[in-house]
Length: 253
Image 1 (cartoon, rainbow, N blue to C red):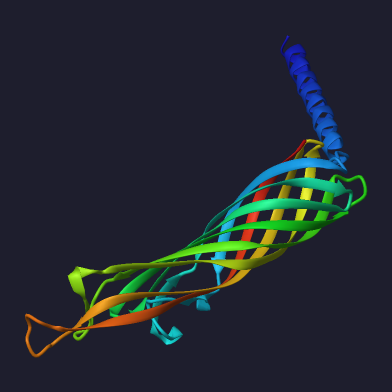
Image 2 (cartoon, rainbow, N blue to C red):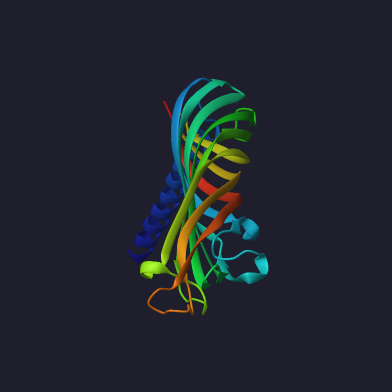
């Protein structure tokens, strides 16, 4: 009886292994030869990481790079896109991208301060696609043009002895909308005809510039109750080269 039970157990293991092998081979075969439609609409979303060049910040926090105390130049990124595949080798798409928030601490216009700058982009891209036969894999290169919007918030943490914004003002802001260019590469795997996974590396480049002003009280003044004042203009620059790495899914209609 024990021998019979052992024999049945071993037979069951073999049958389960065979069944698993058949299912695995079937799934791999089905996905390996899946192809995305050669024409038609698609939409996708991806998430990943963004990194801006460290010398991008020329904001109100400082004038020269040597004044920088610390930089946090990495953040998360999100992309949403939709478009139309014109042929097997080319597609067009519109894309919205969040490009992260970056923080700089430095010696600036009024002592120790902090600058937070975030960016986003809206762009149109052309993709040139190179399929690997009928394998379901392809690689692509993309080039895009659009606009980038950036916002910089500046907080004074510590004032120098002779510069004080009136009315206790400690926070300032500046923003801009600039032409932007994007380029990148990616590799894709069509799991089933309606669903494609992609790994992409994209670069976004734009040069931003804006100005803001504030009224400063000069201390000490001849009469403390009637201090001298002056209007100070400051330039904010955000010359960005932002690199994103993302993993995404695309639905093919």
